[in-house]
Length: 126
Image (cartoon, rainbow, N blue to C red; front, side, top):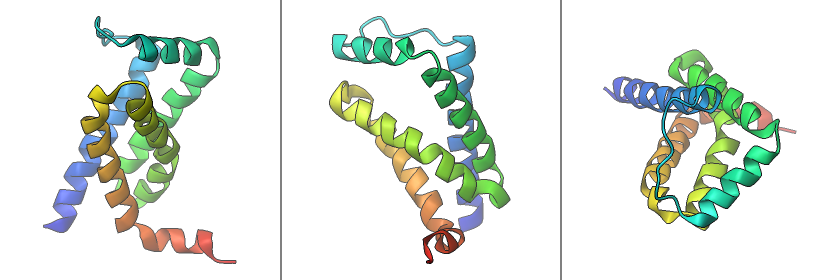
């Protein structure tokens, strides 16, 4: 039962990140019209750096794909982790309205990492 729950959460989480990454390339989801000015400024500043959004998109797509498959889930979680930190910080500092969704995604990611903690131990050994 636990493996089925983990698979379903990993699948939803992975598809969520794949969708977010693809949207950065193809812009098929409209931006909300009532975005706070601080968030608009932050997004504009990030888009000014021409290589940043494609890099984040590639990390989201690759990490999302890897998280879906159990064998590569630990690596996918490591790839998505810095992006998730950025999402949490953005939703904490500039716009708190998206924080509940970001918090749920962060909890899923931390649970995935906790479930794969044995795969990370060799990284921490001297």
